[in-house]
Image (tube, rainbow, N blue to C red; front, side, top):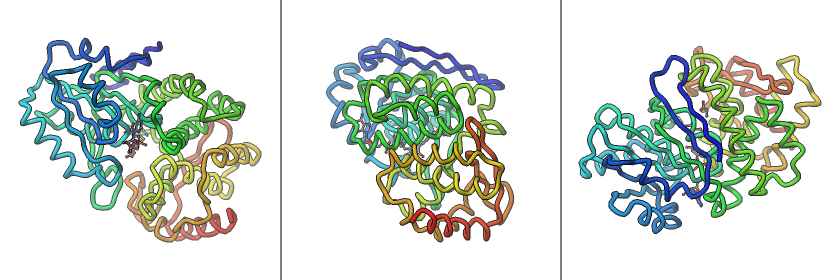
Length: 351
Ligand code: NAD
Ligand code: GLY
């Protein structure tokens, strides 16, 4: 069992993260005497509904339709309606039990309901365990922009149980590995562990590396909880990844992150004093996990989508966090025209 306690600098909120077995059976005790409400999605409910009922027999449960397409204001307001029907009050607690979509929508609902109630995150995907449940970012997609409407709302508790990974399809493990490789591109120790590991999908290995990834992410979030500087590093691969996701939409978030890292590693080669050998190794790591052909993407529409990215700092430019050397990243601000041309030429290189 590993346990982390966080009070992010400049923040009044405290968050505890526990990595342990059988988290569902310990939930009742964590909720205590408070009124509670479980939010999940239909797939997770199908797999774990009985276990949730056993753990929390009297707690109402609401399941959204699964997937990014439902990470919308409509789902958010449906959930808020169910929370109001359940007569949650200011001392109530929302349990968001699912992947990153459930965590993001549930966390945002908790931040809005009566101007903010407690939230316990129980992440059930690899991606949610290593990334989205940690750090307090919540959001829904809106007007064609990912995560356009959201809030920072630290969960009071995150309960991470490796047993949930046993029911995850390989594709979802791949998505989590996308964010893990992103952490590897920022932290040399994680990078070496990944390169040395023969089977990146091995569940025993993943159970070991999840707490290391949480510890790394927390080391960043503690210093910059509201992404005013340092935390931007966690967007590595995400500008191009999000843009490809919006332009294409056939893959999942973590797969687009892997593609984004591949494309942005190539942009780093063109614009920075980078370490070519290191970037070769990083690209090879991404390709061990990706199963799609990075050369087939609609980079023209992706470049246009990147212009709307909320991380951009000035009009007509695209801001990216690119890998450069082991454990080092660079922030690049590229004019839209150059970014669009370079994405097209990288696609040709990757053919
Ligand atoms: P997801 O929540 O859509 O889950 C992926 C699929 O796995 C879904 O079909 C879900 O029903 C299913 N699933 C969940 N747990 C399962 C289990 N234990 N066994 C079998 N199936 C299971 O997607 P995700 O990859 O977990 O999260 C992606 C989302 O996270 C994106 O919306 C992304 O923007 C967001 N995100 C947020 C942050 C943040 O800091 N808040 C960070 C990274 C990503
Ligand atoms: N996933 C990026 C962040 O939490 O900042």
